[in-house]
Image 1 (cartoon, rainbow, N blue to C red):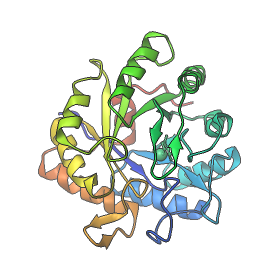
Image 2 (cartoon, protein in one colour):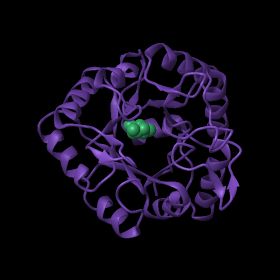
Image 3 (spheres, helix red, strand yellow):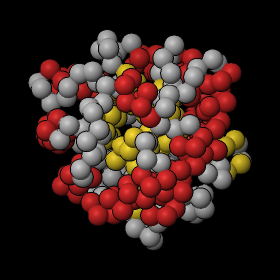
Length: 274
Ligand code: KMH
Ligand code: ZN
């Protein structure tokens, strides 16, 4: 089986220090959490950034400061900025990190969804097409965020219209809108075009069961504070590294080797680093 790419979603936009004091806000904290994940075996850092008080931002300068700090500690890791940001941000705000030189990957959210309470995460057709076109122009590989099964059909349609290049890479996010079930995971794995790659991310208590299913099925895994703050029931993780270590242990038991960042670049067909 292909080596396992582990993505660490170290900060997110919604989780706070009130949920888990190890959630990073400052540049230094972001770099510390990225390093802990990379040392444990992550080859991709999915990155949201915050101001020092924890407010999420897509500010280009703040992203640059965080990316530079991560690069100092982890020169090889793939950094994948979010273009989702936080609910309510404008498209222009959200796109800022794609302007940074050397961005290899970024997320491309392929539909609108409920995000809890009154929150709606808006991704209109024109938003998705515009983000896709900009990523092609800037040589950035999109990770297609799939929160519901129809978002795969959207991605395929936009690929046919020239807004997303093949081979496509999907991240199935289970437990926000669609259920975190084996049935839905299997449906999605069988619904993506041949030659595509895929990662799965289970929310909250679903994080490790989904990781185990995915490792066995040959997909790649995302863990991290953005999606889950617990190492096990009632035990807060002290770092993102602890969450990654647990995935590495499961992978070892199931006979999957862990991909280095350069191996991940090859598996995902990333463009040469600038
Ligand atoms: N924070 C969510 C509104 C992404 O990173 O692209 C969007 C999100 C998805 O987390
Ligand atoms: Zn995210």
